[in-house]
Amino acid sequence: MDALNVGKENLISSKLLFEKGQYRDSITLSYYAMHSSAIALFSKEDIFIKSHEGVLRKLSKCVKKGVFSRKCYGYIHDARDIRNQSSYDFSAVFSRELAEELISHAKEFIQEIESLL
Image 1 (cartoon, one colour):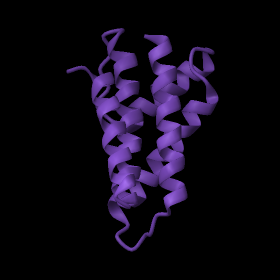
Image 2 (tube, rainbow, N blue to C red):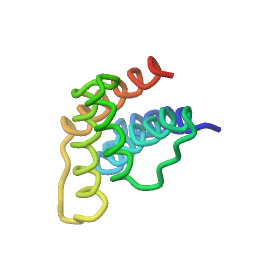
Image 3 (cartoon, rainbow, N blue to C red):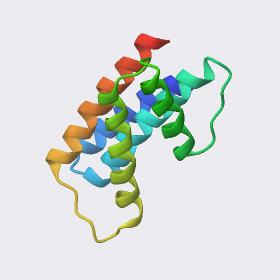
């Protein structure tokens, strides 16, 4: 299975968790849907990035070159920060609205990646 399909599966899982009211985990998987999809874009060029920060740096370069939208870059950048909170801040509470927004962002992000593949 390739990284894009993993990203799509993460998005499906995110939606299922959202429907069950599991917003924390839904948020985490929405981020990973974007992260895996970004990896698919780079692996197309035989570039394999191992860190989350590395993916953001490479995407930032794509934005500067006009290859990738600033809006979708903002989605993954913000989602990474929220994912860190959802994974490590056990007292944090996440809203239905935020989880729903991240699902929407992940869907749009994947669509942009697909258009570039």
